[in-house]
Length: 372
Image (tube, rainbow, N blue to C red; front, side, top):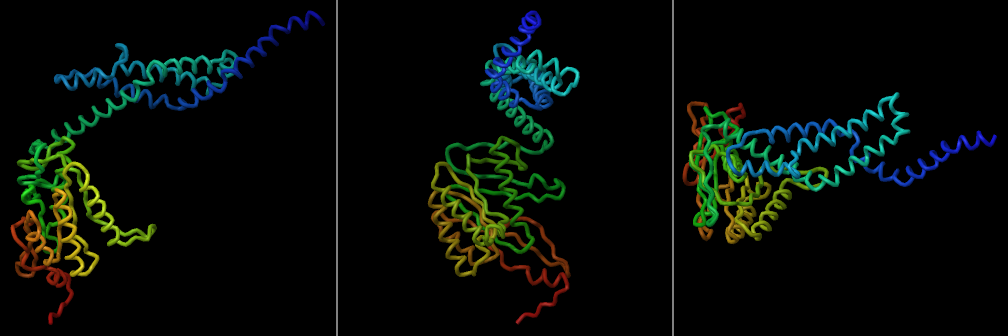
């Protein structure tokens, strides 16, 4: 009995020590392993992306300097990520394999891997976010380069950091077919801060606004623009286009619009020039209130140095341009009738539209309209 008892002591002692060891390290091991559960495939994908950048032969210094950020003490980021992926894969295999699982438990396989992973975190943890940011920057630059390559007729914008200006010559919408796209120009300066666009239905007012806005956004992120010339200042952009009501929030379309306009007013007080777009301004109210409200809002925005475009069917609003200081400018889109067919040329012209086309549109679909 004595021999048997003493012979079992090493095993008993081992169990006790193992239990103490696990109770001490267990919570930390669980925390570490929980943070890397089922991510080996994602890590390998990141490693492949990093390696693609690391092995690329860049010619310009900014890209070379950017690539240097993907190193830690001379070791490439992809190599470090693959080390972590290898340990996570071993952990996943040990937990899934029925044969290896008991031995992995006896040998504290998870604990050893957790210690290795924690050591990796201490060495590289602070650098990981930098690697991801650098990779994201390369991806962004690659997307911009692909956009320029795919659109060889585009031009790079010119930036004007001092005075607020937006000037585009022969602007086209970047998503429209090049063969059918009709190009128009835009010029907003501190002397002419507002363009009011009137015009008939379906004549191109909203598309023109989107054309100017989309090309401006492309220019500000460093992309090429669909124009023959484009000059722009570092604008902040605000838009009220395709406003919708909300049944969930109990907000009407008109109320959504005035909330958006309220945001524009607030933005105009902040530092830096504001560029705004308002399509069919205050369409949800009567002509009298619309004219008073629109004129007041435009005065506030222009007074704060903002520039922008508004479109309208209400010809009374075109008078706002001459009441501003500095004054705005009126442009319009129009259609013409050829027999019983309505023709649009989508070309913007100076001045105010002289006639609408709503009655002609109604008649074109077979509705008889009596006048008088």
